[in-house]
Every structure is written in structure tokens, then in C-alpha cells.
Length: 166
Length: 166
DNA sequence: GATCAATAGTAAGTATACCCACTATCTGCG
DNA sequence: CGCAGATAGTGGGTATACTTACTATTGATC
Image (cartoon, rainbow over all chains, first blue to last red; front, side):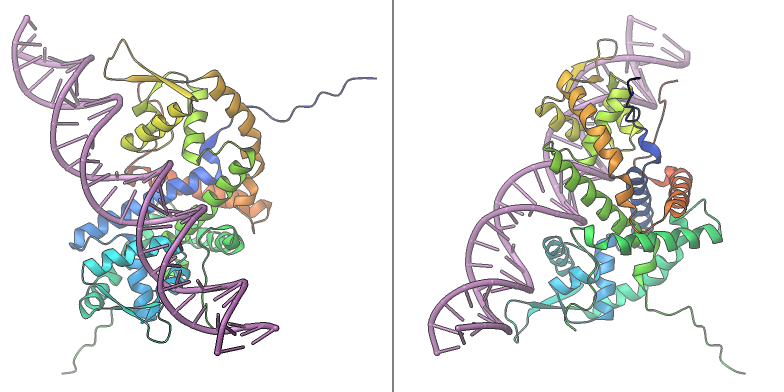
């Protein structure tokens, strides 16, 4: 009888075409574009801060846990984000009288104004993030990315949770 | 004369299908899968630490700046990563005698052994990151992601730099 | 209505991931 | 040779992004 030779695959690993590595690099590019463009406006918001403000505009009075769910962030992380937004005077946080554990967060008038100013800016540089793709490819990439984000949502330590309290 | 009404687009912004937000969520999922699987092996390496070790296996004796370039990381970040790898005894760092500014980094035997052990593990969970995509979609996603990473590489604050010294 | 489990937020700790500025060193050029 | 500019690594600072553990509440159940 002939011995079976089991080859379990080469021991070398080429990282550069693997999902995790590519995704991390895309994230770096995306963050970099965001920060660059944001800095140019004079309002140096991070993408998290912007996302939080955008969510608070859509749903004023969210508590922190719900806010975290809506933009898919960790509860602890969002605390610091809100701290800094509050420090900049863009957000105010008041204890919810119906549930004294929770804090209701709303944009200040200044926060609303700055958000209003930034939204078109953010819209404008979207395509720059996916540089190198044509229209059709961009649409396909976004479709696939949304599919992955949806299918893998439960794997994330900070899953997207819309409508926590129905 | 009739006044012109300029509508510059809606002020509401739906973040959930935008590139930056999706990419960040994919990164969360990818990280989460990596950490989970890694923890199960008993060696709690982060993805950066693994990437660094993998690069050092392929090119022993890289200096930190080159290592940073090869895996697309910031020079300052990689310093800390190497510190921690050194602390775990997986890597050793010696001053390059030909250029006393640089430190030559190599895997220790234990580092080589652990890397060898982890490579098949990392290979095995790759498809889990892109859960929800079939074979063809996965290939297409990776193709598009590679294209974006390549086209946007110069936008990253920590671009991929292969072959720094030709 | 008292107790118990679940939840909201925070605190403290680790690890990226960037910034800027600084020292030490090297290289090129006159 | 000497000096100017570039480069390698680090230090200090900020902001995510997670972990576990803790307190203060709340709601659910007996």
C-alpha cells in the first residue's frame, strides 16, 4: 500500500490579498480621507463624532446605549465620544427622569448648525474613498459590503442595533 | 422675475450604506473573528502582531520602518507592537551595526514555532469574515477591495511600501 | 411589596493608530 | 573634511475600540 502524503497547504501566508488585511487598509484610507477633509473645514471632528451627531439629529434624545447601537459602537467607547462632544459644546446630556440610569443626549443649537454645515462636505468626498472603482464597481462593492456587514453583524462585539426599544 | 430656489440635496444623511461606515463595521467584524479564533488557540496575538510576525518570517532582519511599510502601519505604532512581541519573547531586536539608527528584528525560535502553529488557523477562518457571500461574491469583493486599497494607498497615512530599499 | 435579574453608565486597563517633535545617526555634496 | 538634509526610532499626546468589573437603577416575579 502506498503511503498517503498529507499536504495541508503551504506554510507561507500571503497577507496582502486576505480579507482582514484589505479591510484594515480600506479603513485606514477611509479614515485618512475623512480626517483630511474634515480638518479642511476647520471643525476637526472624527468620523465617530460625526456619526454620533448625525444619529442624534435623526433621533434627538437618544440615550447612550441606544446611540451606541444605532451607529454600531461599543457602549464604553461611546461614553468617551459623548464626553468630548459635550466638551466642545456640540451636545448636551441630561439625566432621563423616567429612567434615572439613562442619559438623554441632544445636539445643542451649535451642534445642529455645525452638523448642517458638514453633511454636504461628507457627501462630497464619499466617492474619493472608493477611488479606483468605476460607478458600477462602486455600487457592487457597496452592495457586497452591506451584505457582509449584515451577515456578520452578530459576530461584531459592537453590533448594529436599530430600534432597541420597539 | 422668479426667484431661483437652490436645493443642494437633502440635509439628512443615511450613514448605513456609505463606504466609510460599512468599512468600519467590516473591520469590527474582521477583528472580532480574529480575536475570538486566536484566543481559542491560547496564544492571544492581535492581528497586527500576527501580521508583523508573518512579515518577519518572510523577511528576517527587517528594520522597524521597513516592517511598518510592508504591513502598512505607522512607524510609531509598530514600535509598540514590537515592544510587546519582544516582551512575549517572540521577537528579538538588535541594533544594526551598519546603520546604528536602525534595529534589526527577527523572530525567536519560539516565535517561529508559534507562527507556524497559527498560520493554518488563520487560513481556516478567512471565509468566516466574509460570511454571507458565496464563492463568486467573495472573489469579487476581494478583487474590488484590493483595487481600492491599491488606488487609495497614497491617501493612507500609513501606506503599503514594499521594497523600500531596492 | 421585597427581592433578583437585567440594564445604563462609568472606571480602569490594554492595544491600536495616528500626530508632532526630538535625538541620534547617516548620506550627499561641496 | 564639514555641514545640511534626510532618516530611524522614540516620547508624549489624543482618540478609538475593546475588556472586565463596579454602582445605581429599574422591572419582573413571587
